Length: 189
Image (cartoon, rainbow, N blue to C red; front, side, top):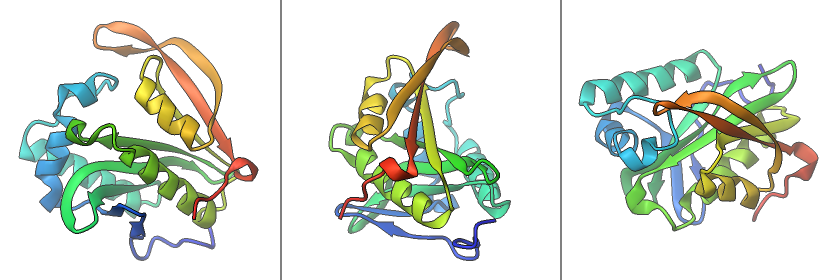
């Protein structure tokens, strides 16, 4: 466990336009709107979250990761509106090698406004500041150009491609790998 963050209280992150906060059962409808949408699932190999029960199950699973101090997932909302427009998080925290993976998902109605980049920058800064990390890594299905743009805007470097390494939607797909080292990160003010 990092001396900087003890998981005793959930951190709320504020950006110019966004509030990143804990995801609760009250967000079930929002989670269904994100993870039940075929456009979001296009580059994920997850079954749709299309019932309140599945959404609650996903929320409980994310909360369990936090309680076990393995990761942290934030709900993304706009200032002045507590309705979930997406989620982002850090997971698979490797304390010995000092790295963590990040991910983000935005409701399609909110695509194209830079919200994923804004949220990703916030969690990257928070993770480097609080988790004693040397690197943050991410991946996306090759061809997910929007996700690639988010990572590149945040300063990540393409580190390679795992060719046809995942089975998604009835076919093998390649996964693009990205990394950002602590000394490469420039916080935004």
